Length: 148
Image 1 (cartoon, rainbow, N blue to C red):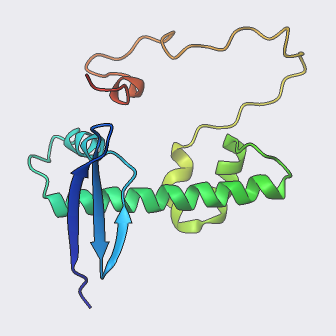
Image 2 (spheres, rainbow, N blue to C red; image 1 turned 60 degrees about the vertical axis):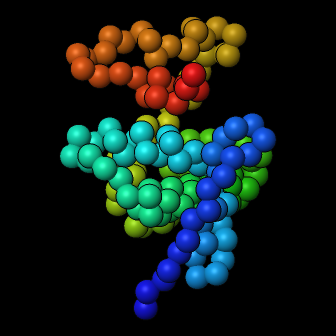
């Protein structure tokens, strides 16, 4: 069974490009910026050109995956009677979903251990700029800053 899909591009009132993907008659409005997805894909030196259909498919798949993670994490947070999703909730959600656990669990940071000190006595949190970078690398925060 093959599925045909069409894409419709436009700009919203803020000048941000929007893309609607129509799969088998259903339209899905993408929330992830296509240009950022393309930049992330181009970080791989083996990729020279990116087909627009492949770009939209990856962006749509990413959105669906993030939606799944958010729902599963929210479910874990509710089970623990919490209103805020924390890293531990995300880790539990990933562990419960075997296909996701196989590739993602090792990439998630370990949750910090609760300390006996009161919050007022704790030292300031470490900034990501405290550690020097290896040569030829840059911080992920720089990638997600707004382009000018």
